[in-house]
Image (cartoon, rainbow, N blue to C red; front, side, top):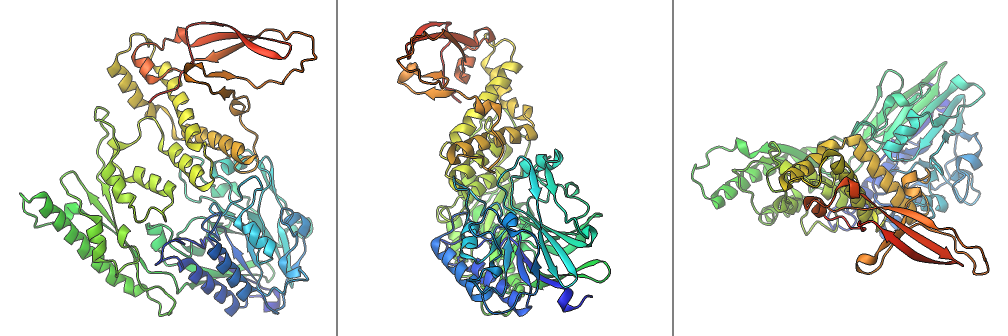
Length: 632
């Protein structure tokens, strides 16, 4: 191993999620307590700098007290008189061009920085709004962190590394803040992502990349395949995935370390894995070397998760009443919860700052013959024994074969189990929507509106304040459904209601997952552009479908029409504007189709307009079609 003078010592962490559960009295300090421990580990090991893999904050607009406490901790642990033992060689004005002060904070004459923090943004604290700013930009402006990897355009990405040197060890640090996974997938596939390399001593540089993307495959393109990254990379610090896999893994081309989160933000198996940070040492002893030493976090709240099935219950009378069944099932679950609470004691580290009330999640499988019990009564049994008494148990129904002839309705009972009134203010609505569709019975799934679209719409509305998101998503799906329906039903005049219902039920299978995600992404880009003045990821031009979209003119009753935007003509112009012929597609409702009004040969109506001396007026109207809203 190289000498200390030639060895970079870096603390690696990710997904700290400061401010998680900030409104909840029991758990609001968990993320900040562990963040303090992480900074203490950095100081105790006298690292050269701290490297974070995104999602430092849980929200783009964290509560003020969370920002205040975060700044206080950074100032307390990162400022000081300890000298910096490495050099910054690359052009700082390029590396930090988007920052208010485009230079590393430890070279600022107004600051004394002992432990520099380098971070990218994640999907929770990504830039947004017309100004394209995030909470990380605020920290950067205060001089507490060095923010890198922020993209200002996504048409042709060029990543330029931060070039650092310590003794005879050269480090090229690349950063790529979170980009929507599908978009980044296409950019890599189309070779639109380029990573610049140093010209001198090219092969002597240790190439370290920090990213915040889906590592596991969610769909064909909703992740970043490891084979997309170039071979010259030596190590990837992979943020976003919360399961701690911090020991570097060799994938045949380069090593990957996945630090995971430092606080459990969801009650799932990956979050129950022991949480660590790592001390990464990079040195040169004739060839590039690195070593990771993982350090367990001692202030993380204990978390135990378990799966049980009510089908495994024994000794229940065959003719038990519903109340007797519910009581027996509650006792069965309570027995398992008590065992889990005892097991959680094994996770106590002895650190006095570690919370002692554990997180407990019991996932219960049930069927038609079972009766569920009262969550409120069950929560009272453990209100002083666990940190999440109202969300201990989650039921998931045994899924059977979907029946199209069964009435489609919302499973109110399942929604009640997930969305508990007491927890609603702290929950992310999009997570609740996702959890409902993941656990609800197949017969209760949406018939026409896709789960992906509605999750994205809710996310845009809640997190990005896009008020038109839900309306635009529904409009896109209505138009898509009508188009497919007219293609599948040849004789709309004579179609029976039963046949139409069958075709409507089959529409979901006619739309592939990739096509659904593509349509949803297109609408999301349009909504974000309309709201912020630029794309959600600050880049791509709108698809032609939206660039040439007509503007709806709202009127009373049936008089609403659609027009294209036009330049106003001064009254002084004497030339008469030529007659304009606009063709408008008639939008049919499903009710119209059931009544046989949607024949393809009546799918268009033509209107004409004449404008003279700058005054446009409606001249005539032909055809029997009229513009309709689409009713489900």
